Length: 163
Image 1: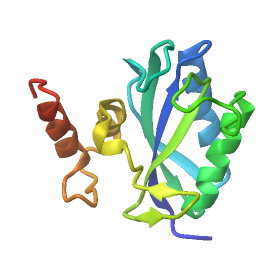
Image 2: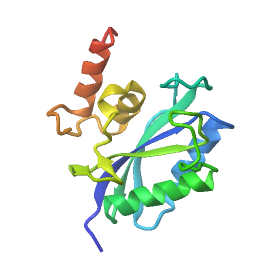
Image 3: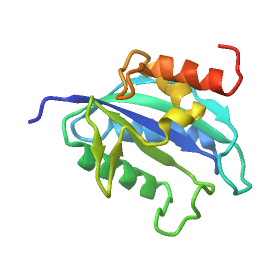
Image 4: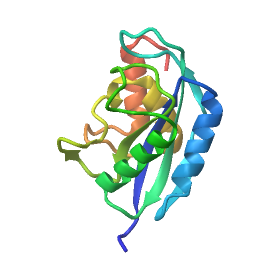
């Protein structure tokens, strides 16, 4: 058995009963073998990103102690997405989805492969990711040298928000 790693997962939904979907997804993640959910953020209503007209998202983040490697954990997350009706091979890029589970962080690992990039490559530009993540892992040090909370504050300043 591996030493558990603290991973962070971003959750999002903008189709169907979004809140129920996110709550059920949290339970499904907690039920995965070798996974113990530690903290779950509030659910936050957010505007969609990208060129596709679609309903608002409900977003959240969680941290979990995970005893498998990052790629295996991501594959398990994608399996949960499929169970909720998501087909990544057929969907429109940045389009609506019943469930989106993104592996944001995996301990301090930096992974850049064809199948997986950790930390999530777009995270520093997305308040809908950093906001919930700052509730569950505010002091996590990112490769850019900032904590999650500092990265959120920097993004809000960049976007003209009062911090």
